[in-house]
Amino acid sequence: MPELPEVETTRAGIEPHLVGQCVIGVNIRQPLLRWPVPTDLGRYLVGQTIETVERRAKYLLLNTLAGTVLMHLGMSGSLRVVDDVTPPQLHDHVDIVLDSRKALRLRDPRRFGAPLSARGV
Image: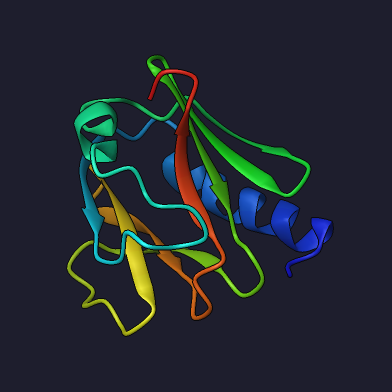
């Protein structure tokens, strides 16, 4: 499981690429992770601007005006910012596509991670 410093490093690494960006798409390739990925996540997230990226314990929070997306990396998960046209690999389960033509990609070989909606989104 990623330890707290690794989660904070992930937050600091993705934050400059996400803050101020509008979500233009959500691609869910594998909805059965630690907890089921909400199938309507895209409906609530598309069109929202990411205001802040925070960490609470080992959870990452992507805050928008409409609410917060709560993410957990599980035991082996990672988040990467990639070009939105980068083909997904076997364990790339969820993309949050941004108007910068980048995507926040959740990779998790063991599927113990989770992007969840919370507080409105």
